[in-house]
Length: 363
Picture 1 (spheres, rainbow, N blue to C red):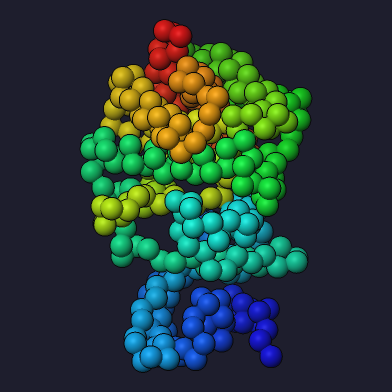
Picture 2: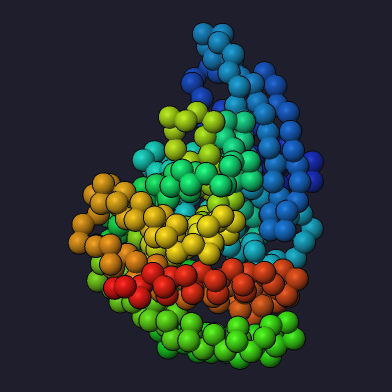
């Protein structure tokens, strides 16, 4: 008798075992197919998870030989529970609900599992690394690459716009605090952060946090209100910097978005902000930011979004940059990560906030 639990437990071991029965069933291979070989190409531990890349060769009943490369995300071995495990499970919750949605610009998911005690989790995706470039490998000075990433975000957002197609998702999952709770969280985090950061930054930067806090609260209030009304809201990635995109070597295809640990229902421009926040070569050029936002907005309309004009999109972008300012703050307050981890992010997020303020000055 086929036993999911047994087969998955074998994968969680220090020396993982990948049973043929599990692979045949999980990959939904044709009846009477058989696996010829299995080879672990990579087995490594990151800051957050264990990554295993598996190459299998299988033969169909017609004797045609096929190659399949697989990508496993698993909990790290012999390490205590940590905050990152919770976010890994959060990503699996996303894939559990959307893995059959071929319309989305995401990697094909074969298995998404969390044990009842939450100590084991498994995410099995197609390994696309041979057919796609990472964000590190593309020409980031080429604006078209940024436009393509924005198009993938527009496709994701339009699919879930105003909760369309999102009924199967726990759309408030991971973001269910009241506004009052959020305000207290922000205030406590900023207070502790400023005491620590005063060693590293001048008063001008530190004083900017109070202004950004006011705009971030406006964003949070709007986000909660829009979720209640299902108005100009969507599933967002939450960490959509350029290195969380895979760019196809086949130019007829579009980039795929990876690493959904921080997805939630929110104001979609937070993703465009994150795209322009990291490694954007035109960081200090408001016009380039505006071109990216306009391109994204035009694609939203092309994909069917209505009742959302460019001025609204631009103002949402501005509020999103204010929220981003608190990325380093929460890295310190929530995760205990020090200046050596998020230090440069203070300058990047403040810069984007100032650029966005210039853009809305004409509204």
